[in-house]
Amino acid sequence: MEINIKICKTFKTRLLGLMFQKKAIDFGLCFPHCNSIHTFFMRQNIDVIMTDKNNKILYIYKNLKPWKIILPKKNIYYTYELPINKFNYKIGDTLEILI
Image (tube, rainbow, N blue to C red; front, top):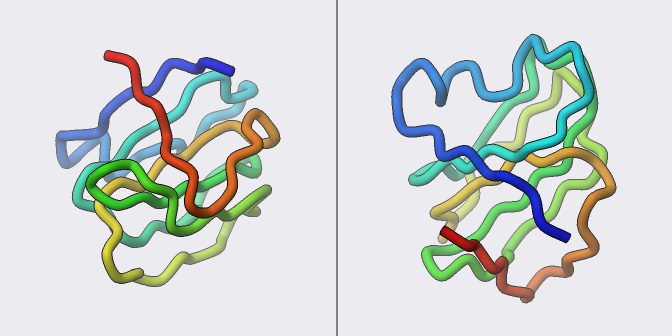
């Protein structure tokens, strides 16, 4: 499955992420240089995928509820916030990102 991914580079986009989104999420966010996140002020559950620099999946959090924290993880370079139940990746898979 394909989905549009927005890269969060600025302070504002990294701070807000998917917070306060009322309508169903139909896109994903990529946070480079990010090894932890929180879901404070989110209005819906999300899936989170954390990868190394080569987009090899090291951690997957499915159906993460609002008001949760993922503490810093070693060797993580990219963190993706995604709509729930859109992907069937496993740890060890590599995300294919089309530019």
